[in-house]
Length: 391
Image (cartoon, rainbow, N blue to C red):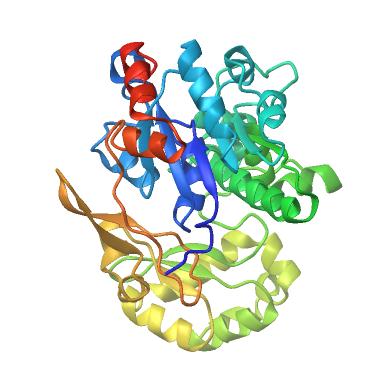
């Protein structure tokens, strides 16, 4: 099967999570992604991204090939630039000044290959007062506003349970790269595409951010309640917790009917959507008292049948045991040479008639000789590079 991005060759200089997440989007759709790593003996960043055979590393670097190349060595840099001449995309997530020190900034790459698309992810942007600060997901969560709205009211800032800034900056960068590749079909020229953890985090604040930019409203922590939609939140049942999300008068009518709350719903605090928004505690208390009468499974069944979005609250083992998650095939097996069969999480995008590649994360430098040969390096040249410790 010819995969959608099989004609795209990517040189991957990324590490940790944001950059590898970007490249993984391309690799999962068939792009030839060549992970370029420093030789083992000079790699001072071991442990970045977790152990190589650990879940984190195996997840973000699948479907790639790996070569070693010492970009700090003149011969290694020259070899990389020789590869750039035949590549479509380069992705890096160094601090902004590093690529220029290495001589692999966009202008240097475009001088060799005007069609090249360079994707860059930084902590805070390519310029400005914080440009050279080291970036880290939790710092971006704090500066972007996410931690200020996460957690229970009065609890104080809380970190989200996943690296939101890392993941979304990777996704945004991948979207930008694909956009630049589409434009290149018309212009014949590449682009420099860049984003940052901070930019991605502010963008992900979405309506919470525009509550401030448009209305001057500073969002606060709302815990498990939706900040603007009532009723939305967690409720206890006879045997567990359920998630209920049901704003608007029509949804409220369905809840009242299903929970048999006709008498309680006549109270002025519950009579209109505006009244319910102003009296969230009263609404929640009425619902909570009723929901304790039956089990979580029964309420989920009854409320969904009535058209009210309701669901369980799972731990991760329960997520992958759920019948819909199993039906969607959200995990898939990969055969690893040392770990045996491991299961990874597939891309959430499905495309008719296309099956994603299922290759494990490669060992460091596993494909060095073969890849360099594809870029017209002779065995003698490869031997010299090894002797000079450029590989």
